[in-house]
Length: 271
Length: 271
DNA sequence: CGTGGCGTTCCACTCAGCGGTCCCTCTCGT
DNA sequence: ACGAGAGGGACCGCTGAGTGGAACGCCACG
Image (cartoon, rainbow over all chains, first blue to last red; front, side):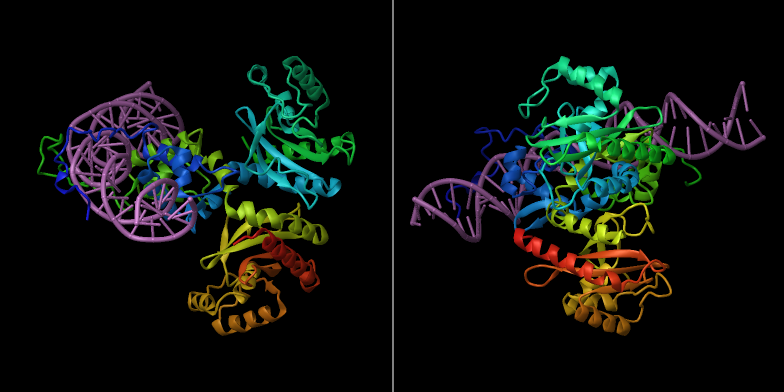
């Protein structure tokens, strides 16, 4: 069967060197594995081999092998030719300090806040120049897909972000202000000067408001969670459709809960 | 160590071959990486290099390299010579079908249940012969560390497990019944016959009770979450200190919430 | 019945992973 | 102070594990 080929074998060499034995770019199996995992995101939680190949740029064989191996250690699972994140990852995630320390302490207070407000409650930590949403408590009146646990948003256009930023070092603030400030809605603060003024107000009041700066129709009140040395380790917020309620009615509740959490963390000695 | 080692150097070759070029056991970088990750569990969420070496049995150099690489792809993070689970894992976990599909639908109903009962609410799925806790809603009155999100418990001694088991195939039930039934408390059902009778009652009633079978002083009511073809995909429970309240008062609430979730999943077509 | 996309298997080449050895930096204990 | 011991980290030559091109089988189109 092969049309014509056979004896070739490795006989004919000069034609086209197999070359490119170079392991591509990120050298290292693990960095290539990371490339595979990086293909998964909120919009693509399930991927076929072909999609992973396209999104990662890895050779098909390599992607296939890595996917298979990842399945065998349960980091991925395979369901009808679609790969998705496996149970092992889920188990491991619960061992992260974010879960074990921060979440553990914060959740009961978030629960209180939810019961008092009946609105979506978020907990986030800073990650570089973004907020990583760590926990979300909500009922049926879900306003938006924004702020899904595990996702991120920029610091400058969210209540959580501004609350954190207002208590951060001048250095970090500078980095964010000099970075691009892209408008996510027509209310997003895109002027460095205006943002600086806003942060001063937040620092004074101890609460940050977001009035449709991240999404139209959505407002939020946020307060920072500080460690023993007054550095912001996280922030707490309540999000509410702007039409439904005045934000400042919730401010003191959010602030109180954030303070309780700060105290709780201090007690258990989170870094 | 053999008393005389003398020929040092690699000069003397035949004496003791460097040998052991074999990459140990689970061959494959990824399986070795899995060994490293397996060192982390609820009781050891933070590990030093030395501990990883001891727990994994890997050579120090290898463990060190893998840990470093895992840090560089943010699967781990290094904090003062202690490795812990990194943010990447946290982000990825939120893309798991357990989070994206099951949790997303179930959480609002769990919230309702919490508000009605003010007691700890659990959501779990079956994983082999165990329940994997997927979500937990609780306030300050936390009764126990049992059922932490991401952890597992045997099927036969938990409300969640019995609820799932009662609606599973005879085959699975058989596997569990013939497996070891270890008593976790003096109330744990350890007789296969008794357990079989219990499951029959659960199947008829649609609710499972756990009366101090997993932990002394702790009871729970659980109901299965079924898919379109009546197969149990998960279960819902409310846990309560036995002294505080009668379990059967909560039964219908749990059942109702579980039914709502089943319906919700059907609508969005979870497998 | 070709054409093309996809998943999967095969295999020779070679470079990335391996791990023993050495070294540095901290505690301790005396 | 100072040696002993434990832990973290760097170096480096050897080799087999990982690599990726090629080819195969399968389906769904046109």
